[in-house]
Length: 171
Image (cartoon, rainbow, N blue to C red; front, top):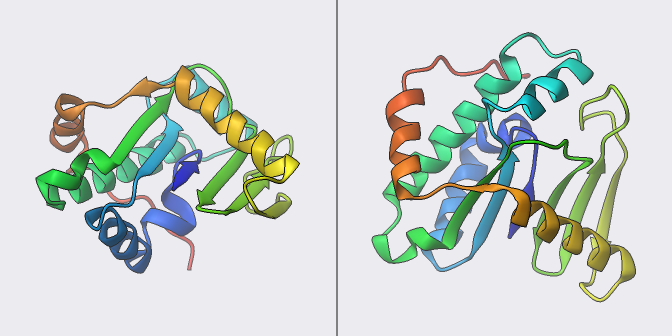
């Protein structure tokens, strides 16, 4: 499972059912890679300006996602913690939101000045298709450019962000 997202909070990690299923899959050996913005980066501040975000809201959503991932990782059996990898984008904007599970991929193409919600979404099937390969390659490029979170940094996230207020969610 590969996930490329701005914050990973909206429509995903704040949903208890999604979190339970995601961590259950990891506990059973599924390999999950998550790539989101570094909440302290210029890239996230620029993205927030582009989307006319409420000041600090996108950063708060990312921090909530990071705490959720770190706590969920801590609850995993030690033997499967390495199955969850998280990296942070520090200097460039994500052109899409991407979720790949096995032979399926969802791609939300961000339009200028818009969040992912009103942007077009494609569903790709089959890892041998041209678009699937192209977006998988894009994920690998962004993954290589991103900052790795190690065990120490996961602990630091829990210590620094655990008491932050939860971001608001749309009902």
